[in-house]
Length: 534
Image (cartoon, rainbow, N blue to C red; front, top):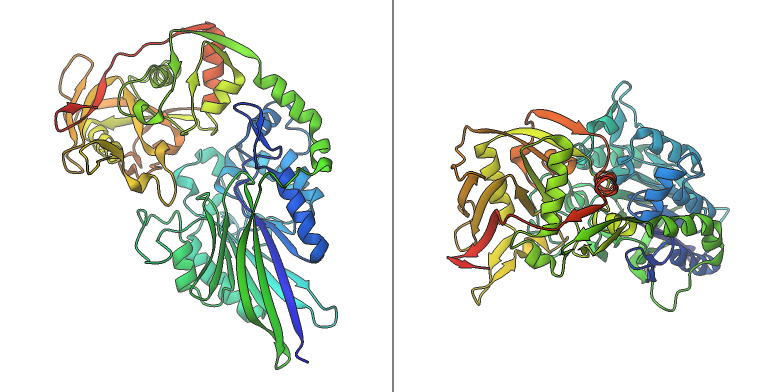
């Protein structure tokens, strides 16, 4: 009889601090979180005790629980690491959001982990070696006499310096993920001779998996398609970053991406058989184990962090101010078509904090609801879930016009002549946060006009046309200031000043200082379609 073996790999990615199955905006239970994923892991382990368990990045940031932990209890064991240690993870890959709190926090997280962190392309500038120790690990599973040799290579998108605070990246070099993968896969194949080679890549796909057509600007942020097509010798590619649900085959490579926030667990099955004295891959498959009502949260995991969760909920419910008027967002779409009191307030805070004369900001989530009459910390964190800091750039009029044209690309005219969202901002990854709204200037978009010609009005607040050479100090979040969202016109522009505190903290402090904030807007911008206001 032929000798066979089965290798099972379980994958999480983009958990973003979600452990409890909780919607922190409402405190209601939802089908997500590591506590529920833990139950799926345990179920799989009962059948395959020696399975491999990996996390693909963006683990430690993204929920009010982790925000509260960083602000109040950062000296203790990070809750996400505590859970991964408990679940006996084999390895993790750092994502871009692992750097949001700086390297001191990240290094502490890594030191506390009972598993290695892998990233071949993030290197120490002084030594040129992988900054986090091991670029890959070797695991042996299956029969004790002839175990299957599995190598797991970790790679992180090299686009991080375009978004992250430079102070958080000091001493690090981010090398091209595709070229890094090519070099290390060749090295591993030659030196390790693995039976199964897995690449865990915190990045996504830049092209449609079926047609190969580009689905985004080929900036290097996502290189999953190129990795599958151009790197020989990969058996499995784990991906993330885009928060997509993928379980498929691309060429000879089995591909998985398990969404975000613990909504699904990725599962890869590899059947091998002994041929000529070594293991050969016979068959591979990928599937997503979805979290639904039938999956109960692991009680041990819940109990581990019950005190932190209770303190987080209490902190979230603290009232910090009042609104005079209406700052509620009833429709995110309408909010982006006309000046809105909530976005006016955000830009006002950005300008007051930095002293800038012009500001731009985005509605960060389709689920943002603005502020009701009473504002709590829950409201603040629900609207400002990313730890973005502020940067003031010195721009010219031509830069502002180019940025507005980029923003105007968010809209298209539908077949019935109405305003609609450009499909490129919805698929394959929702990018509504790349539409900015400005204060300190007046402008108008006509979406009936061609791309690049939609800014039909651009003046200062006194009605004076903004010419190409005019200079302005403009405040925006650090992601945008680095050119994030294809705002290439901002790259390399002079930095006037930077604010270290994140936006949630700045907004909360402003509200606490003023106690009552007035809702209102000056209607300094509008969107039209061929002369018809939307």
